[in-house]
Length: 419
Image (cartoon, rainbow, N blue to C red; front, top):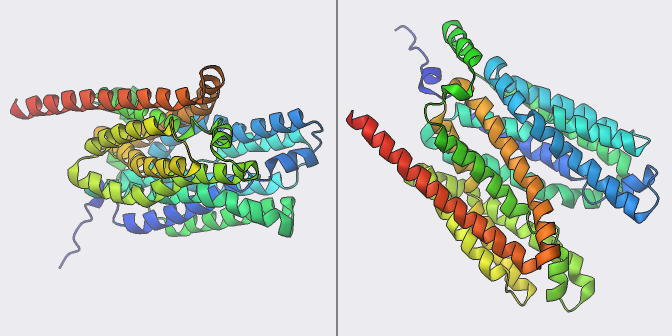
């Protein structure tokens, strides 16, 4: 019998999507562990590199840490566009190799300026986890995209959670500089796995030429209805804003709730971690639920629940109450990121999916920057309860906006089906 043609590419998915998901999951987890393990000892390293006063150490630590996210936000759409044109696997190979080299060199710097420069280069060259999101979103069957993206999202959040824990344990044992070299080696292993294990379909020449012609017209102009995509960009920003808005005030807020002041930092760390833990536990389950009941329904529900949970957080009287509420909020927010990515995936042509998902990642970085900045400003000028209540209003407004856009989108689809 003649071999049956492989129609997976034409059907919008890759027959190797499960293996690619596993590699992307492990690669995202290990690269994010390596990227975030510097958090506990970054001020110590800045001091070792020549910063003297307390203010100088804090200032340079903030600049060095934020440089990576600033650079990544600038180039995320570019890498997404190049991934559409030259292959998304190539973007992961580039990211993992660039991050491995820059992370290893970070352990050899002699000045704070060199540290900041390398942190910028890591942001420019990196983006493995965001690239993985794009590859998995574009190569997974659409009816399984919520579950797959939820699973990957759980691995990404787990890397962010585990990294600082390892970073607190390793430097006393092997030294700060050796820790960076080890992190570079771990990312290099991810580079090897990505290079040899991920399989990406090659577009037929005619289809590639057609898509190239479309790209010359501009990716954004190819989206038939831009309002769902705009709604997802706004929602991605809201997600990171809600997650990060209390970061600047959490230690001061916890200090008001804990009698033993020696436990403030410990309790603050727990409060910051339990939201991520809740999201890790719920991401794949809510993604699977979204595949069944609709991704937009999960987004609206998650925004409503999280906005309601923010109200009692402003009026807690004990630290255990805040810990429990942040955990529940993490459970609710865990379904947002995979569902946002899935809605974009369902509303853009395959040839520009990476470009638009790159914009989504930049929008999330905007929320990651705005959250701490505005949270600190509001907390300092209007009180810490205002941070929770203000974020609550934003999340409720986001839920109403998504409901309105979704209802209009459904009406347009129904009218199009009738005509």
